[in-house]
Length: 319
Image 1 (cartoon, helix red, strand yellow):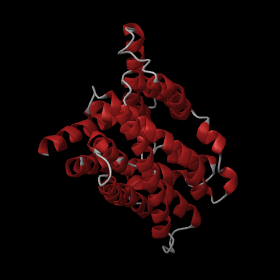
Image 2 (tube, rainbow, N blue to C red):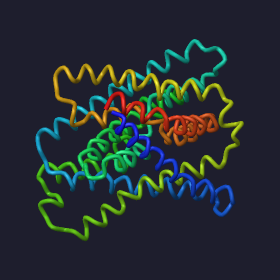
Image 3 (cartoon, rainbow, N blue to C red):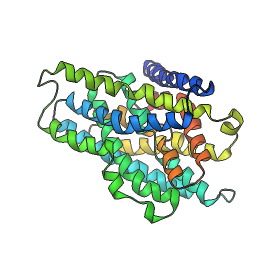
Image 4 (cartoon, helix red, strand yellow):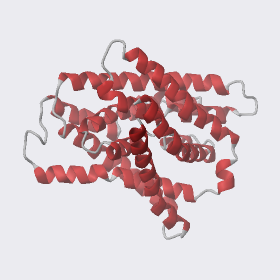
């Protein structure tokens, strides 16, 4: 147990260290921060994330057990995110100091973790040879996107016009999953076909997610003063929901799942889903809705910093 704690602590620490170069170049004004953030965001979403998904499928041989585990990951992600979303709304509703917009941003942040830009690189560092873990993580990212563009967007805006099933389905992580799934089912993969060069290309693109996503975080962190970052009480409500309440609900659902299936092959994924800090796409959705982008950014930053402690604890206690 102690070894697992140290291993996960090292993985989280390495991710945070990857944010340092982005922070430095932004602080030294060596880049145009707005253009850099846009470039990295597009690169991560439209190029690297599809490579991660397809690469995980092409490095995993099909079995019915893996397929059932994928369905279990779908179910776990959907149920926990929806439950936390509505628990978050119940928690913030009676707080009179909060305006309507803040309540929506807090509820969203508490329910959606950083599955794409932190969970996947975390698992890559923690278990680099276990491609099935990344495959399962890609499944959770599909559910994440479906809910973000629908229920999540509605919670932030309070307006049904922002619910977009089209965007929920037609986005790179979901489309790459749909494309890769038949290849996986028919065992068209790098184990069956000796395509070393292509396999190396996919691996290089996939492994770039961690460094680039953390560089993006470092650039965003450089835009804020420490006082602004740490003294907003609203941030700690969202962070408490995401880093404390979510793992508790996740544990309860894991116990329920374990009564009718063997969750050991996916336990690490389940714990990682529950333990991740607030999703960086919180800033994207809040910006699109013309809401408080400062609150969204602070939620992401503070929860990420505090997750350096909470992720290893969750891994140690639950994995």
